Image 1: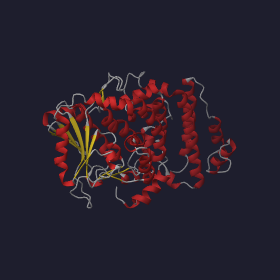
Image 2 (image 1 turned 135 degrees about the vertical axis):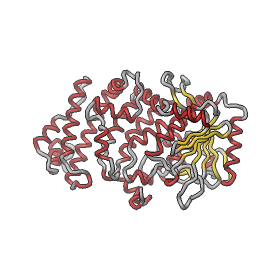
Image 3 (image 1 turned 135 degrees about the horizontal axis):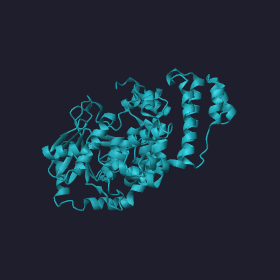
Image 4 (image 1 turned 90 degrees about the vertical axis):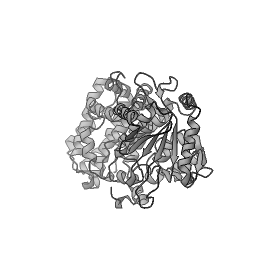
Length: 470
């Protein structure tokens, strides 16, 4: 790797991988700086990214590369990403305005990154490029082309105007929510595979389901659970909503309810969770628990009161690990079984635990939050530290009765002021603009974490992931 960082050193490194010297020289010479002229920059940067991609395509796939070829691929990716940072530092707001018709269209992140790939070739990977890198491939064997999605989203969210509009887009109900709401109102029940919704008095009861994986979250659960959250919030016949885990199948916990095991680490190791899963989850599902759902014509910022929301109650049995604990930090009241516990095992997973870094210090203080996030500290729900997150503790066999009492306590006098009080609390704790700025950092950092060799090493060391069946 001697000489990397200079044009000569870069050319030598690429030549050692067998790439043609003339092609390498032409690509390195084409490295652009942002001029400030959008159309000119699109043409020059796109040509540079496409030339870099063509060079990388001449190398073997990642598992078959020798050391020189892997160094070359890493260099191409690094230089192309540095160019994306330069381009987006100058033009992120312009790109977003072009994709959204000057913010007259709302695009979810999964649509936004695909349209960016068409509008500015090479800026983000196309769906086909993501598929070639990831479909049926172990996480360790991916080049991580999805990191470019994270760079793009980080710059969009860093722009106050574009970022606020994207937050608004992700708070809108999913397209399928209207039909599901009609069914729930007609039947009083809704079955969505990984989520079931029913009525319990004046509460909409949402049960999370992924029984084989201890109610873990993955690509198969996310959209259905977000839709169920939309329906629960929009349902006019319920005053509050309750979140609870279903009974699981795992031999160690069979017949017991589990709140959540967090992200499905087996699926993560086997490459079955896309980078955008994290962003869709935290800007959609989790943020809707915290902020409610938005409407197209009203600004969801707390100052304008433009969300539809209701209080959320969490019922924690067995454990709330990782993403499960993150969810608790977005709820209004947490009832927990006396034998339940919470963890945020980010250190053992190698990823950032959603918005917990933003929210947990408000509950536990900075020191305990750092111990939980950086060192894997377990918080027993009934302990003094656990009670900083959990509002009420009940015996495991008394959870049903305790939950019924909590629902009655919240609804017996009506909840007419609930939405206003939630917004008033958020103004001081986490206004939407603060969330936007946090997500700008999260999008980039999580992208690199998701494709880090350390993530694979952690999963193999702490989870025995290589031996688990996906």
